Length: 361
Image (cartoon, rainbow, N blue to C red; front, top):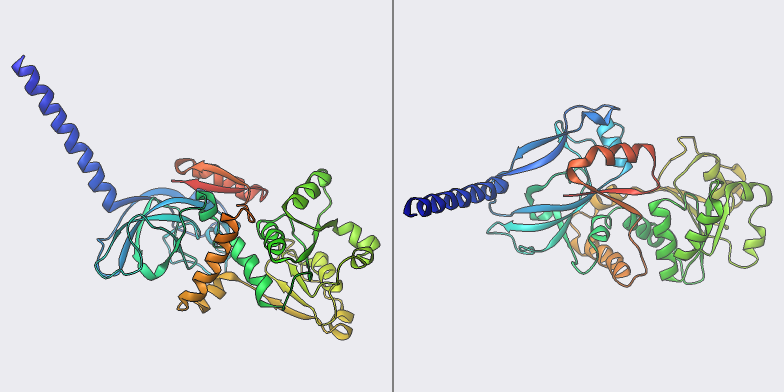
């Protein structure tokens, strides 16, 4: 009996040591999705174990909680994005993490805080990371995990475009294409919260009636297909709402031209994407007689320009988070994918952009 008791005690002690070793190892290692070359084949992404440096001074150690797979992430892996990380690189530009440990000189973060990376190229597809405190910005913990994981790219893109290019007051109109995209849906909801009217162009499709109803449930005032705009125009709509001063284009080609040609005098069209991969068709009469201004917008560049302006960054993030908390801005449609099943999320993002796939660590 004594020997059996000693054996149990020894076995328990070994189990405790193994548990402590696993905990200690997790502090110094992380699992990460790494790509070592730029390739159109995302199967080159592999899960690897990476060493984490010790936490010193202004360092912060975080545990990643959730990270979406965005088309821009795929483009970076393929080498087709304006910002490319030095190889080998960890994938992922967006996500939410929990602060686990802070260095002695860290002043504005503490363990337990939720944070998101400020700049692109952070490498969010990992279980943990050590970085500088100024690489992160805190997000409130009273919004959903998916809301926090997806707040700092698409909704903030919509927010900046609605605020920065035209002086819009309640009752003004915004015209956009790509209205079913993550940014487009955010534009609809943020516009509704600001008292703005939206005219939303979509491509014709078999489930068009269901999509129109879905977008209207988000607050869209008008939803119309590109084909309808080409055939009958927006004249009837403009009898009910002012002609838009702001147009948002993420498609290009003919669709972008339709946005441009329906803007009011001295209106502005902001291009933030080119999903059709076709040159923007610009009607000369809109530029000459309507004096339309063409602008481009890239949130990554805006963040870098305001990198040292923490007040501006925080104001934008807090404003968008307030809308999420109040139920006026919903997180995008998401499919949650366990981290170890990452290949499913990568392949699904390549094949379709209908839902955002989020890796859950």
